[in-house]
Image (cartoon, rainbow, N blue to C red; front, side, top):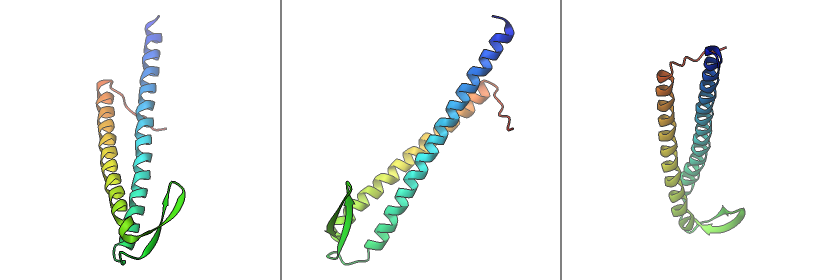
Length: 117
């Protein structure tokens, strides 16, 4: 192989690695957006149900089935779900930042400069 072929191969490899980083970051950002939206929906429902009487009936969708419950039955489960979503969101943000830092180190190590067209 000539030096030019080796250089072209290296450039192609760097481009593939860069695309992989971008795809991973985009995927994580999409997941973060989805979890944020679901978290906001949980917060809205919690804010709506909290001031109501605990004996008041409400309906909840469980695995595609609408079931009748009381506010007292539903609030603890909703709060648990909301707390779980918050934890997942924190983990996803941590993963995103870690991958972003990894990408920046990789760019410096390989002297990669992004050219916008």
